Length: 377
Image (cartoon, rainbow, N blue to C red; front, side, top):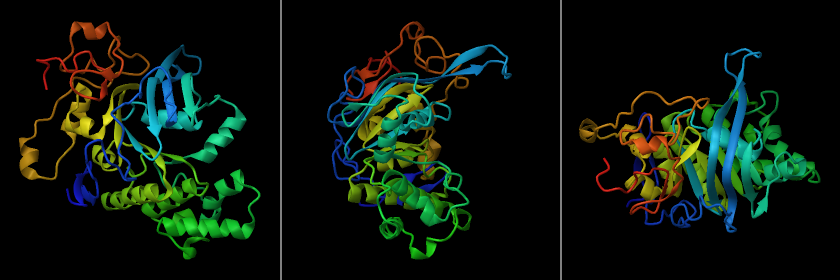
């Protein structure tokens, strides 16, 4: 495969290197492990940088829209398990409202965790502990979806980028802080002339570069990318994706990359986790998930993605799903996807399938029909 591969985005295509060797050789040059290797086991993987088990994020919300209305439980994240290993990128995909961003924010402590366990570099994270929160935010940073809204409009670019460094390493002198800020800005494609400017003077792509510099200035091990290119033009998306891959290779970073654009996730990830209604539907290598998807929901997502080739687009048969996504306030019994699944049977309403290896694929799939001969493909 050539170094440049045409990738389809939700509206067009862009050029970006995307090697697709067996096992998913990624931007860091490190082959991904077997799909879901211990990614959903009850025990934590000691080799993982981040290990998540049965994570739940529930909210008590008024059902009638008023503060005095009876309250219900909104299950934004409902029992998610996965690992992020050193030097790899795990892509997190799903429809809007599936819980992707809530999961990302819960991992970094921006929303409270209801239940489950999280281990960081082999050590359990105590939810709500101030010391743990400071340590995690020093070693785990986040890039936000809206680049301009994530920057303080009253601060110069130098102040924005320097803030994590000053907060977590207060002993560094002023000149050293400026030197590190300038070095990081140059690394993301900006320069000394941008130091004293304000966020409103920059384009969306430039603001996202500032956000990336701010996330990396403290030398984190893991960066959570919450839809970092969805608000950008397609041509700028390619630049940001390539920048993230270059930085990952140079700095030995791990990414949890949240997105709804399947082409972008394919370009940057070695393993892919598919979420629906707060639950994991499928988790495997890029090759397994994109080349031989086992879950009906994964197949529906891939079938809905457009292709830039007119002949293939005309011949494509989208997999139509029944109705809309149910409310997380009142999820279906059994399999969360059964009310829209074209392959659902009576047993799907009774059993809650757990992500596990089924059939001939190495991916972990939460579907009792996966791998069954005669199941519709």
